[in-house]
Length: 99
Image (tube, rainbow, N blue to C red):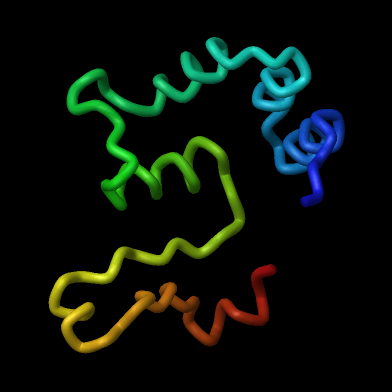
């Protein structure tokens, strides 16, 4: 298993435009990070890891991760044998113009 050094992860956060997150990593400030994340959600309802909209908010808005999110497979899709929902694709005009 390969592990990343906190300094390298912090530098990657700075490169992505998240210097405040880098400081949490360097200081190993879990409570401060949790307080920072809570600023993206109203107190009720609480963050639900099984809710796609909450995960999207965490990944795209809070952490600014450059990823495509796959939605969970529905019961109907499972019955048809689908194991993974396809990630949404960008329109052809954006595929070559954006990284």
